[in-house]
Amino acid sequence: MTEESETTWKAAASRRNFMKLAGAGGFTAAVMASAAGMLWSTEAAAQMANEERDREKAAEHVMTLATAYVMTADRSYPIMQLDLKENIQNATRGKVYVKLAPAGQLGAANELVQKVQSGTIQAAQHSIANFAPFAPVVDLINLPYLCGSNQRFINLTYSDVWKDRVHPQVEARGFKTLFYAVIDPRVVAIRKGGPDAVLTPGDLKGVKFRVPGSEMLQTYYRLVGANPTPIAWGETPSAIQQGVADALDPAVGALYVFGFKDMLSHITFTQAVPDAQVYSCNLEWYNALPEDVRAADPRGLGAGRSGAPDHRSEGGTGWDHDPDGRRQGNRAGADGRVAGGRSGRGEFRARGLDLPRRRRFPARCRPTDPCHRPRRFC
Image (cartoon, rainbow, N blue to C red):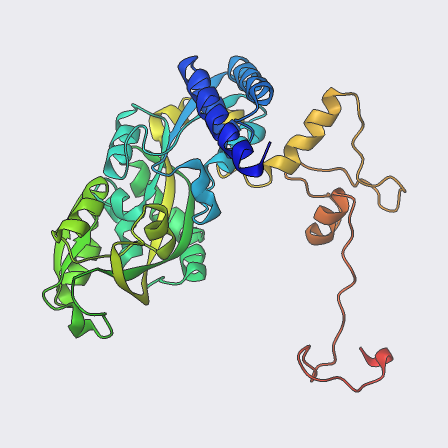
C-alpha cells in the first residue's frame, strides 16, 4: 500500500469509527481517540471507548465541559481541554468524570457563559471579554496596558488581591473560576480590501472594529477613534468577508485556528490587552460536590503526579521517595512534594531525578560574564 493510499484509508476509517462511536453515545471517547491519532484503528478506538465508559460508570459526578475549539487546536492554540479533563479526573481520584463537548458543539462565546450560569452545563471555556457581561468585575483585565503581556496577566489573576477582591464578586453571579489561561495579547487585524495597516492610534479613526461583549474594550476602541461594532463570534468570519467589520482583535493563534489567515491584509501587535481565557464552572453544582472533591485543585495542577501513587498502590506497589534512607520522614504528600526537605529538590527526587547543585558565583560575578577565575572560587 502506497503512502497516499494508506493516508486515504486511515482518513476513511477514522470517519467511520468517529460516527460509530458518536452514534453509540461515546462522543467523548471518539474525540479522545481522534486527538490521540488512534481513530483509524477500530481496535484502539473500541478500547478507548470501553475505558471511557468504565470511567464514567465508576464516577460519582459527571461534568460536561464545553469549548468552541476543536481538539487539534492545541497544536497552535493550546487551550488544554483534554489535559484539563484528565487532570480533574486524576485530582478527584475518578470521582468526577469530565464529558467533553468541543468545537462549538454546545455553542460558543456568550452562549457557553449563559449555559454555565443557568446550569445547563457544568463548565465551559470562554474569553474573559465574553465573560464580562455576566461578571462585570473581570472586565478590569481589558483595561489597556494594565496586563497586556502574558506574565503580567498571570501575576494579576493568580495574586491574593485578585482572589480576595474579584472572585467573591464572580461567585455572586453564580460562577466558580477553575483557572485562567492566556496564549498571547490581542492584536489589530485588518481585513483584505479594508483600511491600511494600523501604525498609530490615528490610523483607527472611522474603522469598523468588531468587538466582543466587553464594555472596556468597546470604550477603548471608541477613545482611539474607531467605530466599535459588537458582533457574535460565530458571525465574525462572514462579517469580515462582507465588510460589515474592517478589523478584529483576537490573538494571532486564534485568528489562525478559526480560519482568518486568508481574510486579512495586516496585523499590528500592540500588546495592550491580553486575549485572556477562563474556564468557569456553575457555582451551585460546584458547591453541591462533596468536600473532598472540592478540596482537589480545580486547575488539576500536579494531578498526574499525585494520582500515580494511587494507581501503583492499586497494583500492590509500595511508594517510597527515600529508598536509601538518607532522609527521615520523606513521604510524598498529595501534591507530590517530599515532606521534610526543600520542595524544589524534593519534587524531582520524588520522580527518581535529582537536581544538580546550584553553582555559586562571587558577589561581583554574573553568570553571563566571561570567567577567568580559578574554579575553587565559584
